Image (cartoon, rainbow, N blue to C red; front, side, top):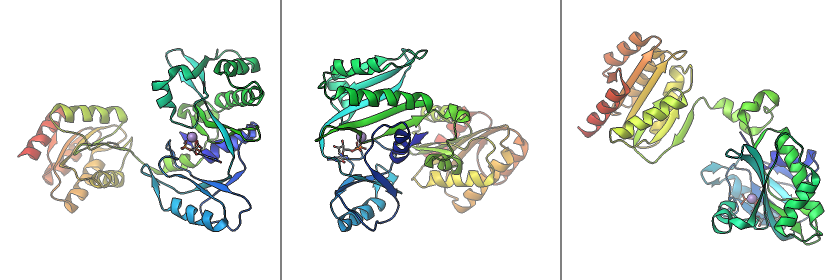
Length: 361
Ligand code: GDP
Ligand code: MN
């Protein structure tokens, strides 16, 4: 799960990592006593370039920009809140990130003097500008190691204690929060020599839910609300399955028979008629030539899935379907589908073949 910038900064504050003064809002503001930066709270990188970071000097200007952002989508994500922060006079921007290196099986601390910009770009063009340190997960990160990383990066010695302190504390955040990725890009060095976390990324491990109270974070409630997982793709065949693995396999089989998936949609376990209807409607938001449905029913019931399909089919009789369903209440599900003239097959290969045949007929 990804935390929003303002949520991550709240946590940083608890660990005494210096962050700019600010507050979160979903509406216009009443007063302003200094220049601010207004930051769209969306979970995508590169908001600055995408127009999600704006500046204002007066309250009128700030409200204009707040309105602008709240009506906007940044890289497809609707802006629901903005973070208003004092505008920092920036002298330099550094990059700091901590993640797990799977090959090394250790946390890795990455630091670069080329901050502010896209770090993937730096990794490609100037990999030597990224200093990496692999932490022994069984021991503590000692402060002198943080200082050594910075010496290696060749930053001015006057900055080392302040930045090393951020590294040391950020590693604590990473460990305590069961972080998958934590990033400060940029750490800014201000004109008056302070070091601040001007941006914040914190992704936490979903498998560590039991150790934490993640319910207070924004994305948690959104996750709960969304009954299915949907990923839009380039093609024109809707693909629906129950379970991520089966849905991926369904995409493969559709490809195998010459189709191109328009989406990945996993209805999850135990989907009822209403969820199936919502899922189909989600798929139909895009122009599709046909829909491939693959369900292996355990707690899910084939008759419920079939009912959902039939109801949507009645509203959109031109949709081309092919369904493969097996498991709980299979016979009843099959009866409902065939009675309503919806193609049904026992194997996913046959269903994919059938769908392509109907589409190309
Ligand atoms: P991102 O584009 O999503 O990574 O958003 P950031 O929060 O990192 O902001 C992007 C860029 O905007 C930063 O790298 C800075 O150059 C600039 N920026 C952000 N906040 C401030 C600020 O308070 N003062 C100044 N001068 N620039 C800022
Ligand atoms: Mn950034």
